Length: 365
View 1 (cartoon, rainbow, N blue to C red):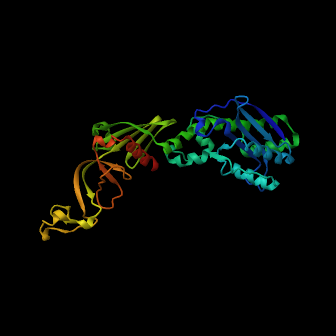
View 2 (view 1 turned 60 degrees about the vertical axis):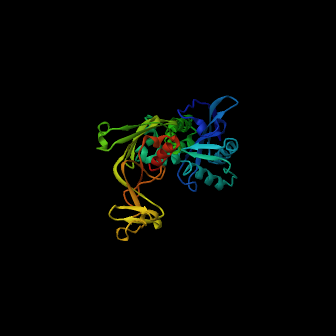
View 3 (view 1 turned 135 degrees about the vertical axis):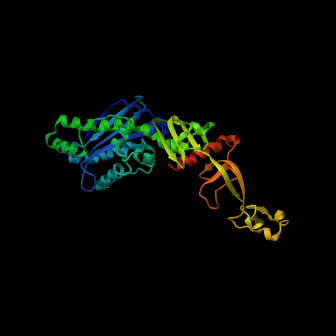
């Protein structure tokens, strides 16, 4: 086994403390001769970690310079995970970690990763696929989304041939090529970390800052409906501005802010009383009244209310809400999926409820 270790420049435009303490982080990537641990072998494991004694980020690579050296590489990696317990990778939950486990079992090497935390960048951003507008979530697609230009001269299949040639020739040039490719992949992991700001944003939401009621003239794309503008700020920072429409609302994401444009409903909606057994429905007035009041109405002018007819009506402006945040709730008809709250500026006097409203919208992305 050949071990290479030296300091590297490793800076990320993303707060690493969101992943864990720097001393615990271990960024890693593996190189193999195939996809199945049953019919291929591991020839390189590369890691970047923070060396607190030297106060710098350090690259370490374990290279299998012969087929017999593979178990040493595995043992060296598992030994490091006893101290570095936060494993950061791209698609490692699906490939790298199961592959390492399979090769360890092949050699009868004991290992235990139950004490580690696995942070798979691919898995974290996958729920954001619709928001990011990406057809593919491959590493190259993520780099393209972030505007990262990285020329990868060799495919995985070509590198397998380079490794095969190395085993025969022991060529330093081929070794350098294999090590450099792995190092570039690891450094590239730091470059794509800002993409994690999108799942951070969807999870954390934002803090309500201000609102404004816009006239139809200011928002032509919404037709004649008045539009409520709500602004939020967050502790995350998005590398690429985006916009998305959900439940009729337009959300714009930029830097550390979210702007929501929510078309309000103007018209007549119904509030349905929950205890309809205690109400009469008055067909002429198209409304329900409590039995204590309905007792004074002629029997011919009243009916026992049902869940569908036990309502009172209200005219005005209403804000749609995917789930109940503000009360009372109004609906177009009984059982309508969307509920509304009567709009008044005081509705947003509680900033926590405004932030809860944003989270409901983000959950639908």
